Image 1 (cartoon, rainbow, N blue to C red):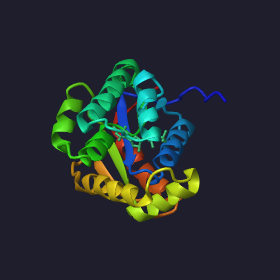
Image 2 (cartoon, rainbow, N blue to C red):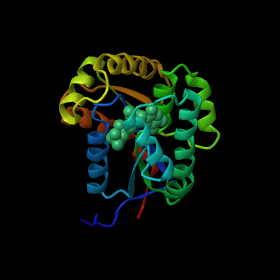
Image 3 (cartoon, rainbow, N blue to C red):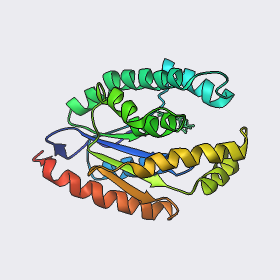
Length: 215
Ligand code: TYD
């Protein structure tokens, strides 16, 4: 299906990241937000990390097959390589064309997931911000890890030890919860998806107003 041509113009690119632990409904929210933006006539690009590029494929093999003896630092480097390519090839070009970029995961995922492996989240943030633009808005979806594990098990079946998985997700969730910046909005993902979307939309709509230009 081809999206209708955008009817609204922005004075600059806007970067929005949707974040949260597995099972929190990020992809659903990224889809709902993208559809709402397209419906309102905004030029929008939706991207997902890990990407489907060469680094992203390597990451998926690892995520599916288990970490083996891959060290946290090596894992971090894979995610950073993948993001570097995404930034150069897709994110910066779209922002330069004054598009809205909706990210289904961005470097806050690396801070939280690789931070939960024992690396310093702030150091991870610094490494990423050397090349990755800071988002204008970040939405973090919060869900109790026990609920997340139930949701994941129901939708994908369980490959990993559920207790281990819950412990890891609890550490990831704790790092997400600590992130405080004016651009970061924390949301309760136990609410129905439509309600979460309404909260996101309220913030996005208000944030876009100052950047609207005459077409
Ligand atoms: P996910 O968004 O769940 O992809 P998919 O929907 O295709 O399964 O991401 C895969 C996993 O990668 C997920 O468990 C989170 C993890 N991840 C990190 O550990 N660090 C990162 O920087 C990113 C982007 C993802």
